[in-house]
Image (cartoon, rainbow, N blue to C red; front, side, top):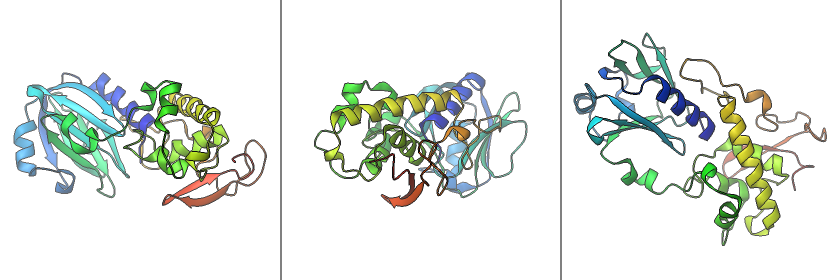
Amino acid sequence: MPELPEVETIKRQLKRDILNKKIKEIIVIKNKLIKGTSPQTFKSKVEGKSIRDVSRRGKVLIIKLEEDLFLIFHLKISGWLVLSEKIEKFSAVAFRFEDNKLLNFCDTRLFGEIRLIDDWRKFPFLKEMGPEPLDLNRKQFVELFEKKKGKIKPLLMEQKFLAGIGNIYAQESLFCAGIHPERKVERIKKEELEKIYLCLISILKEAIKKKGTSADTYRQINGEDGSYLPFLKVYQRDRKPCLKCKTPIKREVVGGRGTCFCPHCQR
């Protein structure tokens, strides 16, 4: 699933390429992605509107239209966006602009969602979302963990706790900080939480700079992969030697998600 760096990359590229463009036509190939209204109503309300802004909240794209309407794009597990001159393979919904460029919402498994709402701040999923990691300073990050219990990795991935962090960057930040993904939050020292913060922020910023991680279906809006994959230290490196100590990387299921870590470096 695209996480904060991937969705931030898409946001920046959309803002560069589609701002103030008018949507001439919407081609709905798979009705399943349109949520909260019928495809016919969706088309009638969106066609003819211009793009006024593009923003992000967690892993969700927010596209502001005229008349204070908002398109919500949630790529989920297998979605990606491509801006091109044709309807792409796996395109489920395509937005044609007046210059005949098409923004394709592609999804092989059709788990993604497109919604049209009046105020994105009132949408329950977004309203309940935790703070953005890049908006927090070290002290604010540490304070989030007060009175929290349970394993550290599932908590980092809980969107109501912290927005935008998923399996890739939770694993990578914990490896960087030397923290075992199953460590109990209540047993992690303040200094260790500060280390997690520094690692997480550094990794997120570097992943954004590299245009994200194309570990699955994610790609930039021009169809190219992000370039952060070669810099991953533990994600999808099961049984390969740790890049620090050469101990084989171990894989376990933590909080229902496959998790790779070094049993020697992470305590």
